[in-house]
Image: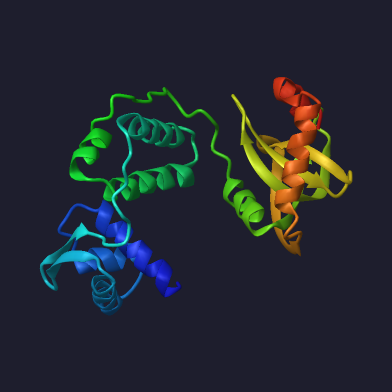
Length: 240
């Protein structure tokens, strides 16, 4: 793990774990040695982080010294808390964990009074069951979008017919009841939507289409808008 990533990981653990956090807890959670934890604590302190404590006792992050306090209004705090709560009910474990990390990082940048507004937000989300069924290949699909690398997928259409095709994944879209993948399909040589629950298998490739993702996505979204596809998303998705 690069040192910069390790330091940010350590800061996140100090923000989110109940203080004081022992060096052993930090080492186990970050997957590094005790020696690395002790060394990284000193690096963070040298960089301006106010970390109270010492070896054998534990550490408390008083002020990370890196992220300046943010001036969010009460309504903005409500929007952050509500949005992250919605993400945590979507049925995607990776996104749920990320949402919790976002709240911890934002809270760490807030003055104490504003932190209270976040902790005691008046807006809440309650869902009985997950909004979307867990899908095992979502992480691989997201990673391919970020890296701009082609995927090979086995796909079943609405009639049950199976095809194997290479696609350029552009974006995952969360519709009311299902997730769809906006892509450039190499088999059809055209843009296509794929329902994620119909993707039977995903294989990563080393085929790169960088830096075309942003331009292709803008073009596809423009085409959808021109066709008025927003109001007919379900029909458009089921057609593939």
